[in-house]
Length: 386
Image (cartoon, rainbow, N blue to C red; front, side, top):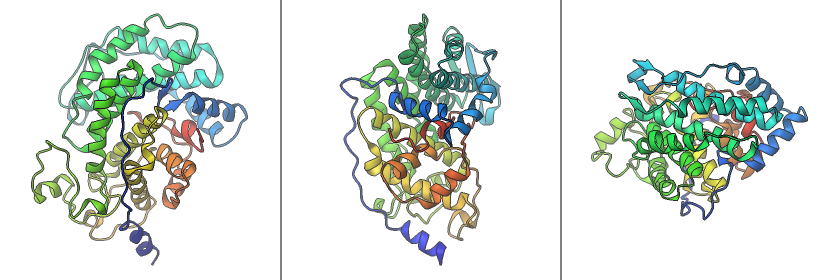
């Protein structure tokens, strides 16, 4: 009976509208995923030994990503094939970016300048070296690394007063190596384009690039409804213009063979929850950056889809057995540390009841990193009112 009641709520999503999205007249800095007010909140909580932030900070600072003796491993050409074969610099690039972000957060909390200079050292190593990404996974790799670099760069540029002589070279790297790739988008599985738009949005904020910010947000606002289904969409999920999905059979195939659609089902739910988690993370991250920049997507269609996606996936991630109509009665769990940003925005700040998401989020605290592009979200976004 409990499962029936929970599923019943998934069939009655209200219609919601999406606010108009455009670049702000002046970008807010730091303003990629975390704002100044959010960072101040985190610093206060950690320094007061308050939980869950202190445990999250201890987890981060105890990780290899926070090492002050890390050796960056930049490459001129990063080659990323299918299923990481070949993997020529792919892991190194992603992990150096996460390390730079880790060091930037550690700098802000501790005011230890060694962390700021380490973040700069990592960013400088790559901006002096990289020229291109190649092979089939190049767009996704560019999106993953390109999502994290501007998070680190925004914190350092706008909070560290010790100087960053090569900052303009880093900006040129983002502008020439990353942005031209990610702004094009992708018609592969939806988590690709969502990650690429996360990168494009973050890079555009760092570059104060209103034109590409608007382009990236426009693609994002088309991709989110094509990734998360609501019953208000009709009998079939929405598609992105130019996707080539013109028949019901093609759409069902793209949705991993799923032919019964309910609120919160994603395009990759029946593939596996890990890839679904990537998509949910990028939906959340872009919405968070948009909110910092002045447009709150959580209160419209994007927020409604994210709320249902989190709730639907959380239900089964927590161990509920799927019904026979869902993914042929079997799901591949492993959502990852991706729920904090969306849960904080939709439940803690806006007051939506999200019981399953809350249970999963609290069970997984402190949320760490997936070593791809998600990192330390309990620290940055747990119960953060800003």
